[in-house]
Length: 245
Image (cartoon, rainbow, N blue to C red; front, side, top):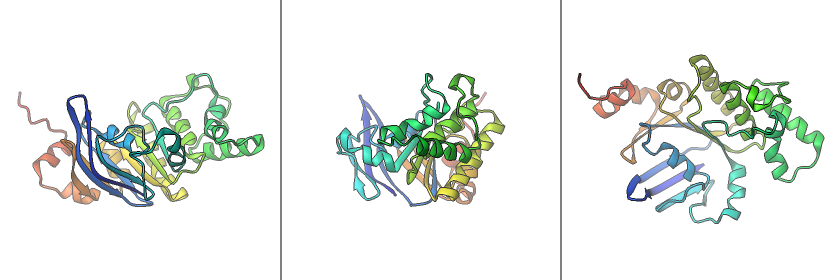
């Protein structure tokens, strides 16, 4: 579904990505882990053309997108939806209006069809009947779910999750993790999850990619990651800084 080849990204004088090579299979959930500030979200934004590489290739469904102008990225963004950390809801719109926004942007005018699609998306994220609530009246977990409903309402082939459990309590985080797996099965969707939460990684991943110093340092299953005796990997998954008191 997504293929990244020799991807480099420099911001100012800082090298963020230093030769990323990664293939994400159709229908899988690939989790990208790594330290905060290590380039995970930067990599994710390349998958929908929100950032352009300094050099290298990004292919989505076989199409090179790195050099596409903004007006041609619309078709790609119908295939690949992204759930941002905050949910990125419009505070002036209620839940129904937020979820309907991409449908209206796509030119759908049938109000009955829009209402049906919104209701179906809300049911998928366990928020049936919450159409009229305003974002200010939603908990953090509910905002994430509404953001996810807006992402899936257009039935993308791939969903990108940017730190989906950040800021949530353990129960809400566990609920989001289960939801990611359920949606993968129900919609046969490809999912890419960026996180530094190992519980999310272990619960949702078919494969895990560890981003370290701008490169993919490890790629494999959760079991293979757990079994690794590489000290760099062990320090990360155990949360060891290497410092002494």
